[in-house]
Length: 191
Image (cartoon, rainbow, N blue to C red; front, side, top):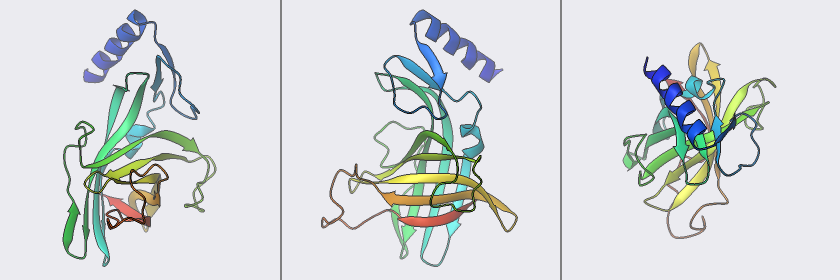
């Protein structure tokens, strides 16, 4: 019932504002006054709580779908999240409300749905859908690209993650601030 009300509200909103609705999948660039909708509910498949607990670090990720987020130019469905990162026994970042505003210090967002096997996941199938977004640590002004693919490893459902240094980082990586994100590839199991 809740989803039906959201759909009706979105239809009324887009009709009243003359807004155009386009699919989020393989969207390319963005246009003003367009709503990029997750028609096939691909983002829903990535929602949940995930965890990596290895000898080198602990990483917990919480992801939730947000419908029709407005950035004052266009609207989009997206995956929002937060994370906890513990390295060498020290909590570097902490979980907070994944749907919190952009002041969230440990923030994850993904709104690019892509088909095909990404370079970090050579055993992913060509028709698999995966996500591209970013993960940020606002306490150090660091950010990285995050790539997510649904995987089952040894019978355990989860996500294959690849975090890569982002060219959009607010400060150069060579600065005195240490990196506070687990850059690299790892599997997080779904809790």
